[in-house]
Length: 294
Image (cartoon, rainbow, N blue to C red):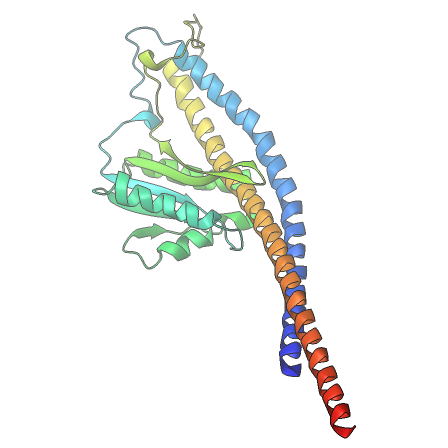
């Protein structure tokens, strides 16, 4: 029984140590989440405004106007597809990375099952998941999160945009985690290229016919505006994923801390029961010995 008590005491000590680690990781993630969420919340209005500008231009198109020759709007048969998988570099964030990987696999196996697929991984977890698969992987931007800035994300987005212009890929999709709050992250797959141009019959009521005067011409304006929007949009993907990662890790560590509390409570109950049983046994032995002597 003494050996059993010692084992339970050691397990309680081990759980205490683990709980201290999870508490510390939760605090670190909470601090990082504050910074990351501030970044994405400040970025979104700018991104939305750029998209609104593009929507205003497209909403002003007259009947018969065609901007289909816009460089980033060239719709081709999707024979060669690039999937940009954005994950985290580290684990311990619940099912966040596994859900992103599942989303990418669904695109590969379902939506683009008969196409030639290439994968670009941003974040080490995505690369680790696919490195043994028979798929072409581009990992040149795998460490982008080690120094996340607009300059670095712009380098990545410009490279991706250039591969589309060169005709290497016909469709480019980005799989990422969209941040809502610390407890909720949405797993998204969005078409990055070609740019989806809104058709006249799809325009909402807010896209009223406006008589804009463009300087330079509308085509030239879009040739400048669309790349800026794409670079900003790609940076938003990374900021969203970064905030989602820290939110998921904070919640995972919070849950781990709660689980450690529950396990510690159960172990203490087991320890007390075993200790009481040992004391009862010793008392019974003393009473029995005293009775035998008497």
